[in-house]
Image 1 (cartoon, rainbow, N blue to C red):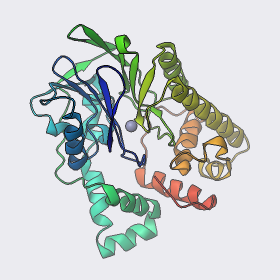
Image 2 (tube, rainbow, N blue to C red):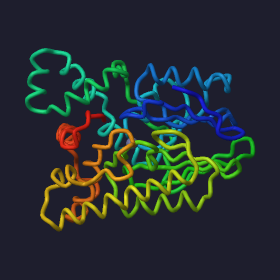
Image 3 (cartoon, rainbow, N blue to C red):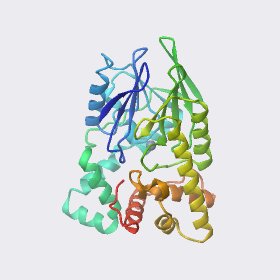
Length: 325
Ligand SMILES: [Zn+2]
């Protein structure tokens, strides 16, 4: 984990492995301090606080959650008494989407001989993701702390005369997606609207909306974008995400028209210029999303997580590469 100074008053904490759960956090060190996203477990949250402590003396007064996924909100409890701001849907969805029990149980099941054997037989992908997570994470002790302030379309903070705009942009990668724009410093904290140098994991939302939001980010003309995952970038990060989504959507449509299943399509589609990104086999999730749209399913149709991980493992195997999530 490292701290990066991105503009006069903005900082980022980045998880360099850039695999699942390695989410970034941001800090705006004005107006009492604002932290953006709180990491995936308590140890990472504490380390993030320690790093931000080098440039901010106290505990920040405000926290923003860019969306409802666990890897962005599981450190919330470390900010006692802070105002936690998020889109209205984040507060509604967090208890379901970010319930830490599912992940805690998965890691425990992979520890016990009998359940491990069962997992290996039934859901080898779920076992593989549990093993990867155990290398870096411990989800014990996480208590869900919900947003205390919610908004609908926009929320503006005035931090010692510097405006910070929270703009609701969901559902694109997730229902509650929010980007944070600091116009005076030409910074955008993009949350998971942008994955950089790793394959996006989109859950509930549409391609159309996601592409529109990337255009919005480009139109804000930031000097620096802090993505939800991966290294800091400029607008090139938004342009590459657009190209990736367009590529996968087109390839998926071609395979769909040929009558292939989403899994078979994912095994066949060439990773193209994106094969060097982390976890390229997560392609399956983006193909499945395209298929959902082609089948006219709703953007919030539920996912079976174990099946998703199994499919990612199968795609990695088909490509002859070690699986990574
Ligand atoms: Zn996310």
